[in-house]
Image (cartoon, rainbow, N blue to C red; front, side, top):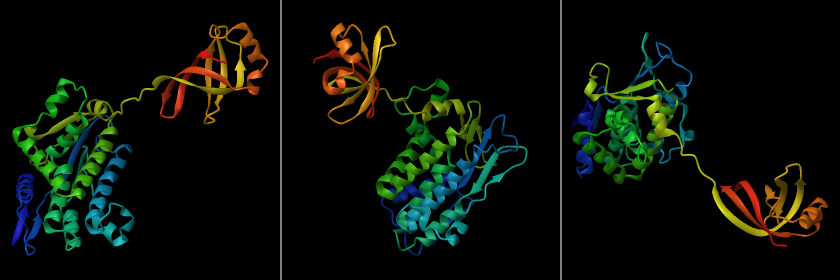
Amino acid sequence: MITKIESENDAFALLREIVEGEKIDETQSIELVNWPRFVIRIKGEQFNGTIPTRIMPSLLELQKEVNKAYCLAVYGEESTRKLTKKDREKLELVVKVDKGSSWFETLLGDKLLKIIQDATGKMTPEQLVLIAIVFGVLVASTVGWKAWLTKKSKDKELDSDLEKTIELSKLEKEKMELIAKAADYSPILSHLIDSVHSTQTNFATNLKENDTLEVGGSREERKPENQLNVTGHQVSTLTEKAREKAVEKVISGKYLLLYADFTDRDDLKVTLRSIDDGYEFKAKIPLGVIGDEQSEIIKEDSWNKKAMELDILVKQLHSRYTSAKVIAVKS
């Protein structure tokens, strides 16, 4: 018996059957007919039959994801070091770039079938088919890219246009639920989904502010209502990492004075070393915090002979102090 998958709808229909408990007979063969087809279009000043070098790494990432999927299924791990020269040759993608436009297109079906064929007996038929289908819908369908956008937009403030772009229809919500159930079906699939999302992020981060990424089925079948269009500016708000803030706190301990600078009228600038852990850092001591006697002691470099107990207000980022101010000298 041959099961043909000729479209995204066919793929999701089979995906639903598997996650709902249907078994695939070992004599049943899967045929991917002109699906999945990775097709994107990028619009921008530098896209007119040309490919800026900043986009090339993203296309190579797609190849890496195909290789990883193969290794997960055939070798049980994502490390591509196990790939033989023959493996790489049969998995190699050919990306078509049309003249006078910026369409990027490659058919993935034969590569995914090779995964199913070469991993037969190493995983259940259901697991193999799920790997092929989930990988296909994630990279080649609008709902696959919306799944990534939805994940990236969590807890982010979005502009109204982007909110409208990633708004899910009832059918799209059902499809995303099926993908989530598939991830629960196999830990390998969960790992594969995260990996593909990482590649989609790499694609997005290489867009310039005014570039537009268009995803949505084959060129022949593409309809405005099924398209996903996002600008470089929109995705930058989703992919930029939140800037980590230093934590302010008061620390107390014994410190040796390594260096003192009196050139500033308001603050004494010093370099201190912690007696406890040997950590060295720069700090300021407002001249009002220390008296004339202590100031003279510091000038004479007497602190090198004796540890001083200090209270210090610091801002700490990871294990480093980004600023430090002595607020009390106890001895």
